[in-house]
Image (cartoon, rainbow over all chains, first blue to last red; front, side, top):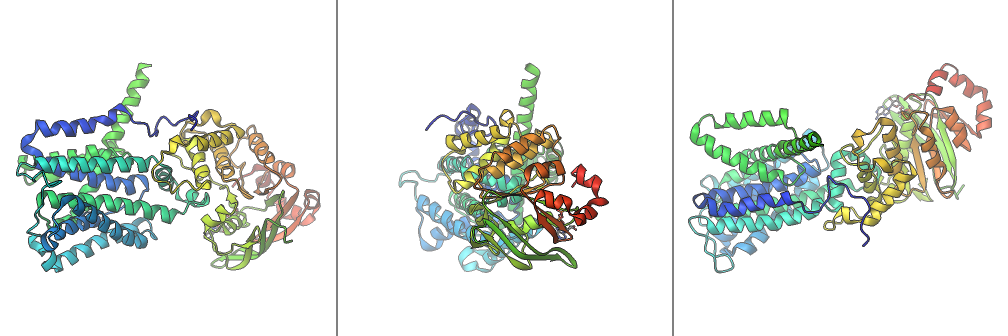
Length: 327
Length: 256
Ligand SMILES: Nc1ncnc2c1ncn2[C@@H]1O[C@H](COP(=O)(O)OP(=O)(O)O)[C@@H](O)[C@H]1O
Ligand SMILES: [Mg+2]
């Protein structure tokens, strides 16, 4: 393969040194905050969840308020596998949960992706509400309002027990996130990912160059569904519990706020937004249990007004500005 | 007429009570250089939309290279060699000029379903896109975002994207609208350099461009064909003069 004479410096798929930062941070977090590994694992899970939303929102431009439907599907699949089927081997449970969420995503996507804008938004919302109601009704399977009890996990690889401190949980979540991230990174930098960007930028033109837009969007939606399902399954496995709120509107909203805070269409936005949101939530809730949401809301408003491309977009702009000053 | 690349028979379309295409028939052979002119609101853009499949006709038949494509989805027509440009820039504004053209090239090469290989490692796609950009004198701007370019240069990206599809039939909707006259020659030269095997239909208001480009001219008025003929015939037709008499300023000005 000859070396291309021209590359786009903005969007090249080459690995940049800054990309190592989140992984160094996540890795050192294991040693620096041994008392917070349970929270840490949940943060990593939400990073994965937000990253899956970025696939459809940031790349394909599909605005969904029902992404929790896929997260919840993964969570309940993994939970029910263990609690009712007795299938408690974590890795295979994770794979099955991802596949089930993928199938659900494919079927839902096949319907909702015929629509756009507000209709699409409402349909994604409706699907989540329907699933939550279903989970609420099917108490025998899901535990209903009380949540799904009796989830137990066998040791990872038959060796590593899920301990009380969350050490195994943290490393497990980190490893799964890393694998999923590598896949997502390859996908968004591929010709397919480029085509998704095209759909977000100008759908009419994509039709006019012969792109099967619907098919591409459905592919992206299904891939994101698998990732969201895996994230949900991780939560069920590492907490050995599934509550109805995995399917809640709030969870869909939270993950969208996380992504917007971090920045969409960058994959790494999730790595900034999810920890920022969850640590803020943790700290603000201690500070003022009643008004922490106010703090989050103010931050969101400030982000949308002053950093519409999120924290990552802001740092990119600052860096561009600084280098311009230098020269 | 069976050797026509594109054939439109009795195509009709109304928006409510407004008839925008009234039994329009048109035929383009390989090598055709055909201009479509007519006053604003005559239905020229709608005709392009009908042919490319963004608007469903009420009646009539469209044949592309012998295939009845009247009810084909848009993407399938493009894969069969039908490409268009837009009267108003319809570009990927947040992407670079090069990425805009690469989008068309990789779609034509059916790469857009490839999930794993990096797009920026496809040297062949990038080289082809760069060659196209050179042909419209945009190679210097390859790395710039489209939205940073002046509107007139964005028009050239419009054309480059369509050329990247390797069309057999190319429909140009007022390609020179918004291009400074000092730069429109780049556009015309790129169109004139196209292979003799492809057919080009150009909607254009600027009569200098029309007469330089066209072998045949169709005049559309209120959705119906007023006349069709060589530039000399159409230029001498008193009815055409009548239609344009009050519209002369607009005709020359190339407004939308
Ligand atoms: N989607 C649409 N719905 C309703 N009316 C339309 C639509 N598209 C075009 N028209 C109308 O059809 C007429 C022809 O428009 P158009 O094809 O753009 O003309 P031209 O390109 O010749 O200027 C105009 O009166 C326009 O307002
Ligand atoms: Mg028009």
